[in-house]
Image (tube, rainbow, N blue to C red):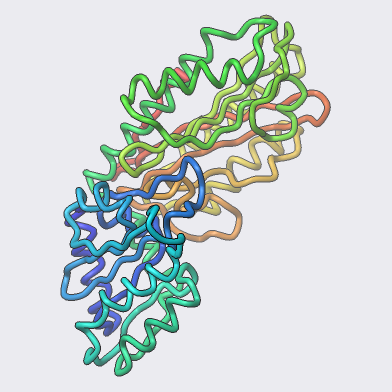
Length: 372
């Protein structure tokens, strides 16, 4: 369990006059417990829906399928489970989830007052069950009110992010070894992913862009059978999860001598990243940081990238603070964020470079090492 985050949630609920909360956002459950649902194969036919958390009097009870009861229970949370996989009867996991949900809430039928609910992630069928189970409570949509509580990371969370970033750096060091004509994007991916999992000692969920040649000018994409050619740019954006928390970095390479146009934009993007890193400190607003990095590229004569300048890392791979034009959120010590400027020349190639930073009292600490 993440005790500091449990306390933070309890204080928030008291400040809002909420007696209890029903949590359905998986990132918030990870933030509270460290448990993260498996994501390698997408939605499972052996689960009726997302894991849920019932929070009352400072205690969290999680509802998951029996297939996840081991990993979820290891977090230290109270646990309620329902049968998922079975050969004895038809798969009816949504019904089993609903029945277990009603049973979990049955002891609280007399609960009065306001109960916060993460409506956006709650299946509609369970909302009906919730109304029946808590007839005297007033259900209040929490919206995204809990998400900002994740902004400032605890020391425990920072260490988990550091571990994920070490895997991301390892991926970048590994790909460098194999950049030669004739190697395909898929072969590079296999070499990088296997090295990361060998180091981690377990399967590692990863989001990634791995593209070469003119495809680097299209911002990103999944690895293909394209074989590298001399002079090709190669871009790897590697986003691994370990122990429930995410890392993220990006680098661009060249197979042999870089074409002059691409070598030029590489140095401009490197300068933009450096300028952004030197600006990170408490009090700087996210949109100010975004504007500074975009303008660096614009003043160099190129159209700025069409995506965010950066984002937070934590229990989600794309957390607050989002470094985007609309966001006026001031940076504060304890935030972890990445910056990832790029220049993309369609039909020619592109460069994106990304580092991660911990905001400190006096500025920031660089958390990634792959660009050094």
